[in-house]
Image 1: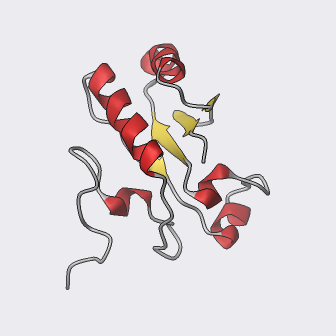
Image 2 (image 1 turned 90 degrees about the horizontal axis):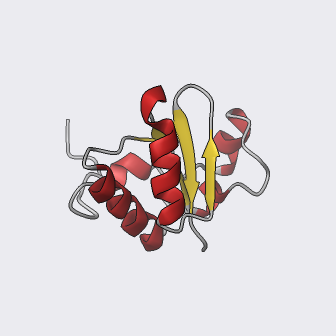
Length: 115
């Protein structure tokens, strides 16, 4: 099996493939989002697992995303959060300037930047 086209480093801790659409592999991504996620990782002192990055319109509809989802613009990502860490990560994310910090279902935190 050959190398994946989106499998390359964007920053010290994130690879492009982490942000690709789960159904089609397409990626749209704001550099500001990656920068803020790197800052969050640094402040947290532990890895940040992306559970949802870019979503094409079809995938966004399939997962029940809102019509104007920032995921479809590449300015949002959902990350995995352990319940005992949720409040700390919400505080850290707000302090780093994410414009949307939304507690999701099943241990997810939605983070978005302007763009």
